[in-house]
Image 1 (cartoon, rainbow, N blue to C red):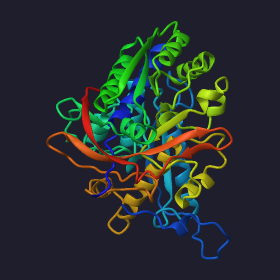
Image 2 (image 1 turned 30 degrees about the vertical axis):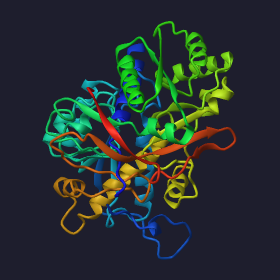
Image 3 (image 1 turned 180 degrees about the vertical axis):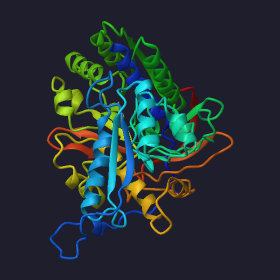
Length: 433
């Protein structure tokens, strides 16, 4: 059976839930030779033709704090810098036009207007927006949005939108199918099969977005036969120690959460203090970063029980040639993250689309035609195959694959199996974004 990209709508819901919680508090690819090292005399000269303009919208100064959204942008810019140093696209450099929307709908609309109407970008890439209020305007202008992070429902709503995790939805202006999105249970199946987990705790705030996401996780866990322990803490004055003590008493094998990064750190500290030992403290791709030692400095036991799941190859997998190219190009960054790697993949995706248009002209329509093919895309092996289809009815089940890593002090994020082999036939459960 063909390996299939998971429909990562639930992962988008996770990001949305965490960010909303925080907000209330305040194809083909470039040949490998294009990225090889060495002083070869036949290396292409720096690009000097008419620039190809690409827009990147990032909520860099949003209320959720600096650096929360900048990973995809930084990864994409690193790719384009490396590309331009090696001749660009058919001798034409990629000119990146950035816009910080400030995390607001008004700011997002301003960015969309500036990039599309004034700068006349060919496409958007690696969009990471807290409030994608300008999404309909992007779609109506037929500007392809490539490899964006599905923080909201835009990538399962609008035509000409191609999120980094793919989509099976009709994308006709209504989210998903009649307002419902669907996500699989592959994460819960993985820990059940690989680690023998049977009891899972879900920790959330008594806040609407956090509680809603916790219910989605609980639904998926129960579908996989888990005993579920729910722990809800007060958003203003959270008592994580009481929650940690209870999940210890209940014998939880796994801990999932719908709280922000600071809350996660406090939860882990409390778990260490009460002696709660779990098989895995599971987090998502947004927290798959090199800052773990600082973020969890007060909880060494819990820190070394951190696991992350996603749909892209571990940024620490330097044994893989594609990852090595990413790491070499980003070695000047102070930190590394999975979102940076996914931004790099988004930039590669745009580049492959643009390269297909060099004979006929790099236009919005040509780039969109490349993106709209019903072919899987892997960004040279960095992504689990990405699929875009427009199914009239939502899938009831699907074969899905996922990338898994665990944190180990001294080694960083260590991959657990291969992402193209960690595959499961799982049900698809509905939720409203």
